[in-house]
Length: 381
Image 1 (cartoon, one colour):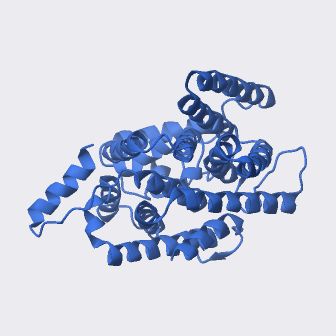
Image 2 (image 1 turned 120 degrees about the vertical axis):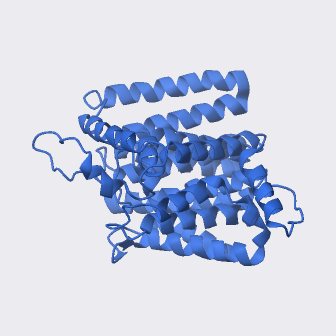
Image 3 (image 1 turned 120 degrees about the horizontal axis):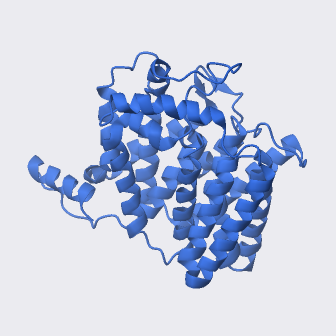
């Protein structure tokens, strides 16, 4: 099972999106198979862990069941969410960070090499990351992976340091070539957070330098693209959507179906269907789909995991920094909703939460007592 997990983790970033089965890309299909297999294995091997499923996942599933907008989308988002739950739980109970990180970095070096080989290294923007659906998804994936390479480069022994440094260097070139502004700022935030927490006062000084450097590159390299006007149109329409049903939303996966009823007119001469699937702000889209309640459950879950993870381990700090930078990126980007990034994102949280899982306890036969244990896990530290 572990070998299958590692194989999918390496293969998914390498598969191009031109290969698809009906409406499912091969990447998404592989992640779904992996996640559902992990969930089945976890249920059969450790059913008592059922009481420790985060409330966020329950809320998302319930929101879909009662979603009035299910017609028009086949439930891909629900299946993908359940797959992510499987990845999260399997990583939490069965995987070790020290063994998974080398696999992730091996995947990174193969993916970077493959994409450079397909496009060539030219000092011009990559219109599309060859093995990704577009450059923004490629950039979001790099924001998740590069902080771990950074941690290896500066905290590992010399072999790990050289390997991590090479991945980080080539990854930085690839990120610049994508031209994704939000991902550059997200990586800057991730590296700054890692340095500040790992090196203390000296790290805070390094963090200021990093933010200043990335900010300068961003400002001078994209002077005419500080804010894409189309984003404002999407956000305005999404705010109207959110205001119509703010607490519970319209159900997971409903955005592409409901948004056309609220959308603002796109700029004159633009394709009216341009970027209609996502609003380029994960918090707005999450509220529109699962409401303020769902967003708060999500933020509470990740805050709790970040708070209790073992921060003395630099790899844990790197994963915290990577997920933080990824969320910063997705205030403007859409990579949060693609399986190649979601796989790494939920894998990181599973690995981080493995340090804070509850002690093995005997599960009471009384269902009321089981519910109390579940509530204790979800809402108490």
